[in-house]
Length: 386
Image 1: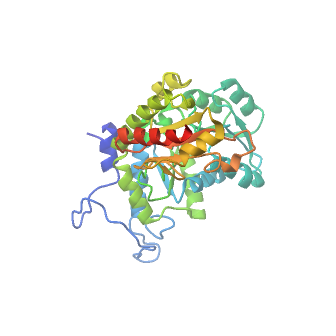
Image 2: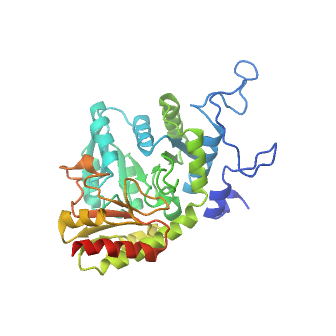
Image 3: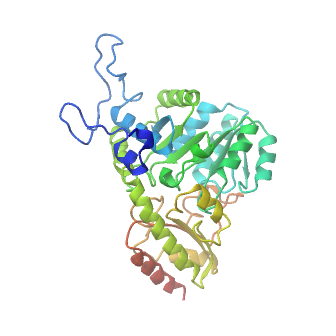
């Protein structure tokens, strides 16, 4: 059976993970060397010269990432934002424009607007669910990228990837999809027409809250060459231990995402019944406006749930600060459940803009614990609202 025909979990375990030939070690060794001996000047062994350019452990991870996203080339970076920065600098020039979701991750917007804006890259935030508004924004500028997160962070909006790809391509632009929330287990944007997939591998791909990283996956050799050059020239690569930890996490992504999704669904349904709750934002609920689209382009609905409270900011803060199983912390996607107050934490950089997150919202990253314990923890925290 060819690797292309193997199932997701088989590819996750075996892609890039051939046993070490000298000893037969089933787990490939971690290569910490920063430099490589040459057989005479320019006589490179398997192309290895210097750690910023290539490293066997990072190469193995990149092969694994490409196999799971259905891409031909993948690049592993030191963080998700490092990946996004290299992507933008590789494929845009001053005067180009990015049309992005008006609920984009705060760090992405800060990078595009405040860092690369000074370099001459313009941007227009738009509601990605309004395809006419997207077309108008794309046509109004020299658009190079249409940039979308689906599900989005933290409003959990679902966007039609295939429709956005058509809009971008008609305008000569590229569609970039941040697939961090879904992971390649639940969604493969390249198969739906996207040109570039980006990840914060810190989240579900690493999966254990113990390593920071990012990734870019593409299916086009010309795009890949440009991205690879910037990665080499700038050097924001993942180190060998980071690459190893990410690979180890990626091997169990499928089984973890099944559990994350089941827990997320149960928590969302419980929250929906609570009188203190104004809205539950989770695409697995039939009441979610993107539910049918999510059913079409995702395998399951994931472990991320956002909730808004009738009691406003005070209620959201009270619940966020009174859980015991859910830990109040930045980030998401680990095996442990995390609670986040985006307005003052992950999205503080967009306060006062049209991307600002409602102050009555908290974001839950449902881990793989027993779901009964997650619900009991929330129920206890809700008692502080009485």
